[in-house]
Length: 334
Image: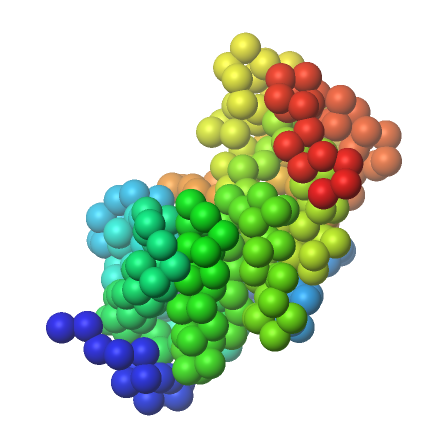
């Protein structure tokens, strides 16, 4: 039986974990703390951003995808060894328990990790139903994460907005209660348009979302969306930041996008995919990415020892196909 948020809040004081095991399950020679220090030492540019509520948010996040708990546990350990400290464990992936087990085993102090869960409650038909669905999702997150001794979250995210303004208000009311109970520090959203953000921000006393997770990649993005969110104090985190490997939306445009990113990468000793991720961070966003090998995990966090020039950023903007296919989603006054 699901317990109440109030009951869960009584467990929210962090406890000492057994860290004797360190990195296991196929994670190789370098301890997690050493790997993170190695990444930091090689970084010349900021690898995190301060959110509007003061939270420090690493720009590179590992977003777990749909696979079983055992796979989630193994890949999370690989990501930690590579230097990842930001994690998006979505309820849609159905493996939050496996992720939580990895966190318990990894040997990295909890305060060095940024953990984000998510709630799906967009099928509600009215405000009260949206509130109830979201409240249930909050409890389910805490119970799943609790299997690994995670008693509080750094962030909770609405995967989708409700179908009406009233439903969004109901969703947000449940999130504010979770925050008030001390179970989460930061509140976030995903796939919210500016007008939907304004529904939340319209109430002066309401807690503000600090992150909006949106589909964004170098070859296909709304050029105004990062600024539109920033005007509301919201940081954009890109999902599908590599366009499913195409670096753009349509297969027909992939060759041009890959060619330019690879060309720029050769100048810096980087891959085309690293250039695409670096473009995002220099444009003012961050990203959550998936990977399944130690090499790719390492590549995805090895971005902060080089900088794209103004000319390179402009060239990359020119391969953006979204304006010609859809026009501006946010609009000039968003």
